[in-house]
Amino acid sequence: MQKSSRLNTILHLCSFLVVLYSLSMPVPAVIGLTFGEKQLTSFFATFAISFSIGMAGWILTKGGEKALKTKDGFVVAVLFWVIFSVISTMPLYFDSRLNLSLADAAFEGVSGITTTGASVLNDIDNLPKSVLYYRAQLNFLGGLGIIVLAVAIMPFLGIGGAKLYQSEMPGPLKEEKLTPRLADTAKNLWAIYVSLALACAISYFLAGMNWFDALCHGLSTVSLGGLLYSRKQFRVLQ
Image (cartoon, helix red, strand yellow):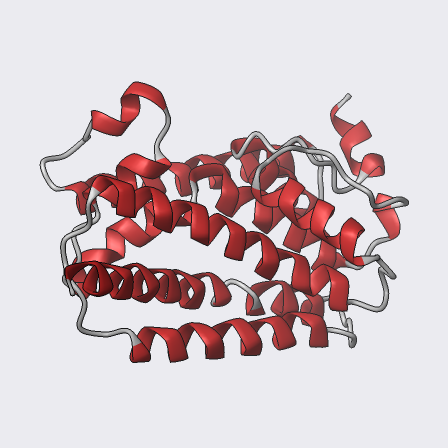
């Protein structure tokens, strides 16, 4: 009974993380609309599918144990990174403008969220702006980890986030807390991370990039993703 209750909590938390991640999908679509793009259904379709599945899972799995054990934290981290990879692949695979195979779309999506920096896409300068921003967003979210963001919000769900935080953080950092409350530590980490990204983007802009390229390069730089978003604009800095 206890194992079933813990499994319920794991599924409940994964569903919550899926809902949280799905909320990032409309942002590239808004960027695309800003530049007059019309083929943005891939982002809206991904949002609708992931949000619906996440909400359904979240509602159906209420009522489990509220305390996670160490191994539960690792299970949630592994499950979510797998789900994260699938969701990240969807907009790239659904976008007819890219004409990517499932394998190529998966490679691009996983490369983005793991901040690897490798890409299967060619002619970077002429890609749709929504896609370019999406790649930067993948780098940014993967750089610190959406799980760390979730830890900041988990107290509202009444679930302890210590084990989940420890499963996500590397090396000796997993035992360190900047503040007495883990949720405050996660919030502070994201505040610092976002501030660095903004400072980096502003620096690129002041160095001569347009606002869009400065934003994308800033998000990629602070996450150590290393992806280029405009070779022509990047030469301005050289």
